[in-house]
Length: 230
Image (tube, rainbow, N blue to C red; front, side, top):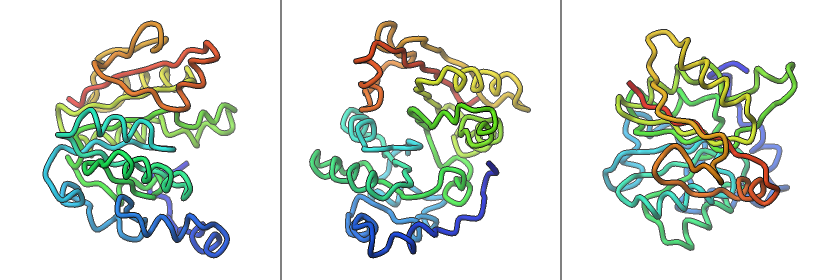
């Protein structure tokens, strides 16, 4: 799937009047709708009303990780990227319930990140359980790819981090391959885990996502990989 593909947000027009979350997501102060998001490119700290390093979660889902990390790290600014209207609303309500002022959600396509971020905008990127697209013919749809990792290296400032949690082992393998082959070697591997529940995460702090909890209950491993921007 190409980066920076044309983002004609047809889902808005198609869902307007059918999906109640379309209108609702625009009414929540924690949400930045797609049509307003690009104005913050290059100065995302201003979107939070107070300064602080910005961490991006790609695919924030129902907001368990986003709200948990924002609560544990109040000195940081947390931005959740999610495309589905209902998930955006559910996550925003979690932020409201926890009275978190250092977190926002933006409804946007993850393959259009260059429209949202400029060089050095981010101090960290967190990717939790991205879609596996397990069949070979679907591999081009995976977010864990060399083009995406190269692009993120521009948005994350030197010294920043990237954290991946996934139940799909090929995602970790693809990430490690990208680290080894990317021109300029912008990422350095800090650690991995083959089973976060039993062996721990490679990073010092973690929040269990709702999706991760389901794998824990089934006794299935969740993998982790931690990178540092050189």
